[in-house]
Length: 83
Image 1 (cartoon, rainbow, N blue to C red):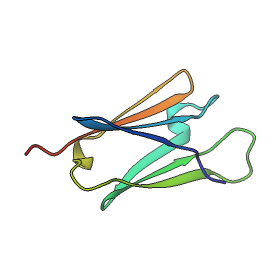
Image 2: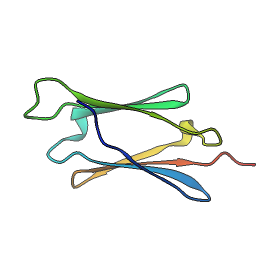
Image 3: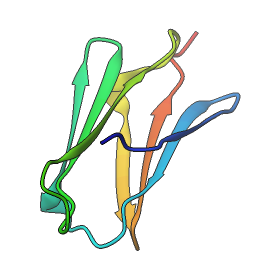
Image 4: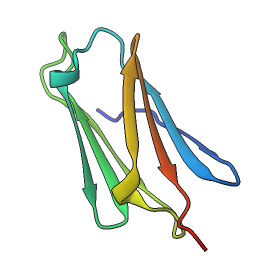
């Protein structure tokens, strides 16, 4: 099963958002893999984890990504690389 992720690009950052209600932070894992982010979540009622591999466009600094999880919404903010 795949996680549905919304991408929004602005002048300064890339914002990735997905809805994962009912999870605790320990039920999910986010890893940077080259120019991609890999999200894996263990949903309480699912037999297997759900996941998504998101290709991050060039010009963004994955190493400075900030993830927050509040009230079922996972938001990852990736800043643009300084010019």
